[in-house]
Image (cartoon, rainbow, N blue to C red; front, side, top):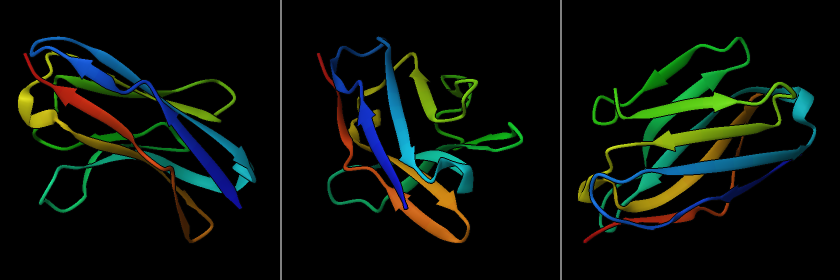
Length: 115
């Protein structure tokens, strides 16, 4: 079992920045990859960024060049640095972990980009 807790969401003006954190606990040695997803009202949940245990990263086209996913050395915390935020980035952001064939989710953190 893996538990995920997100933090760092909030209200920011367009063009601003936020950093989200996701702390993993439990059987973290089973984690193969972690990522951030988001879901806006009336839309499906979509992948924003992911990072594998080897450090490979991938991004949605809509955030490439603006968002950066990273992790700490202990590989139990993943970050999402979000720069140049746009109103269309407004959503609930969820942390995800793929661990030995199982998917785990955090409860989500709200990000609102508005003036």
